[in-house]
Image 1 (cartoon, rainbow over the protein chains, first blue to last red):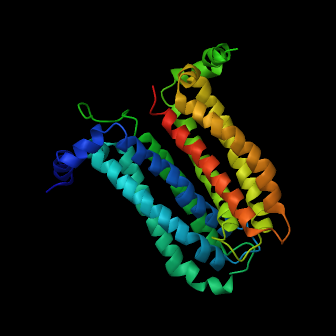
Image 2: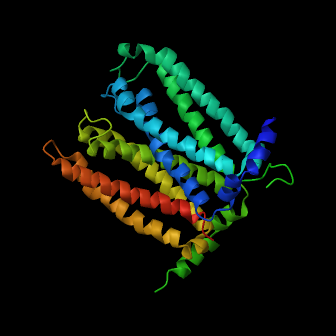
Image 3: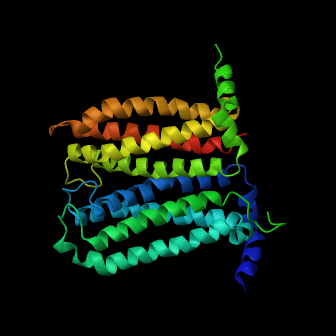
Length: 170
Length: 158
């Protein structure tokens, strides 16, 4: 089955219709998605700022990771769950929306960035754990993370607008 | 005394009209509002989690509060400026929106609490009673969550 075929099938499932037409549940799920930005992105931003050497410079990077990232991961889980529900409520229109596609592409970029950071730079954190300003690799990863996540938030907000939607799609 | 004439003045201002008349200004300003939300969330959580005995609990509250403060203030400045612009573009809708009034009702005590009680408790030297820190963190989280949740709801009303 093609992706669009899958979305069309998804859209006809009773729970998708119920969620789409619900008076309260859809707005509540969307509110959870937006407010979890504070937990997920807020803690990620504080780590990125530490990696850039602009806040908590006296605190070990490994301590920031160990103590804040579990909250980031919890926020990510809530984000993915609420995001999946939002997609499930309006699959076809979302799939065809250009901002949604930009968002997914940037999400993959952000995931790749995290993976490269952990596989390369962070493996040697012992050598620069207490540096007020971490090495260039860490700063580049943090800068990329901030730019990508800002783009993801903006693109996500823009999904609500149908400026570039194909005609006849709701 | 009704505040309606003031809201009407905002709605009819040149800035409000320009944002309302533009296709993309509102979403762009709202994007900045959202980005500042994440920054404020991080700056508040780092300190409130610590006051609750979670997060970076090996660091003194004082240090975390001092480090987070510029990011909190910076985030709030972006938030207030973008919020006023968004408000100006739909002031009349806000006047009749219970969510808007709920947001303002949370926002005023949240601001006052953050820059008085919370600031003083977070700056205190060691010897702070843990339950006091926890109480302050809980009040802070409840007030700011109220601001955020009601703020999101403005978009669903009207």
